[in-house]
Length: 73
Image (cartoon, rainbow, N blue to C red):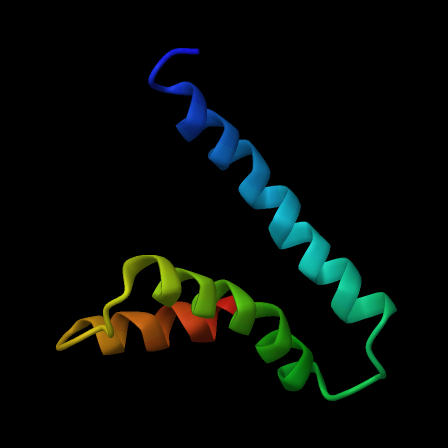
């Protein structure tokens, strides 16, 4: 395996994991408002990223996160 292989595998797996959250929220959860479903879909990914980085965003990053979160809905 080359040094790039883990990065390529992670990049290939990430969309599959994101797609699985769509399946779970549309098939297995009761019909909530669309905003609640969007929050339930994005929350695990955000929590996972905070666990990986182990650092709370500061300064301008809060505005960037807010904008990206709004665009995600």
